[in-house]
Length: 100
Image 1 (tube, rainbow, N blue to C red):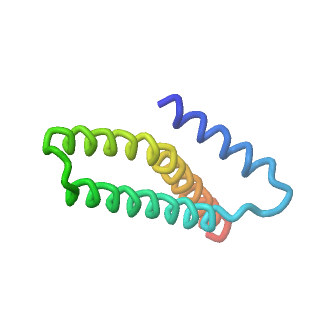
Image 2: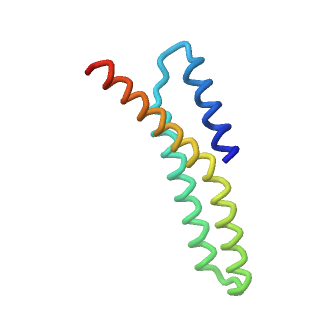
């Protein structure tokens, strides 16, 4: 939860402190692309281990380690995406109120 608060605080400072309009959609797309790349890389690593000639017990340990590392690597990106989506929803709501 603390990491989510840090992301939220940093993102708010970035948006509010920007001299130019900040493109949340572009940042969301870029972050989503990065997350997809991490997932693809992880899948490739898992398949490589599964198809290798390693002892099954060792193979399971390696896969468990890869899974743990993958969760740790992707967590900040998931938190950032959640926060960006929240900011985008607020921006859309504000725009709709301004128009309506």
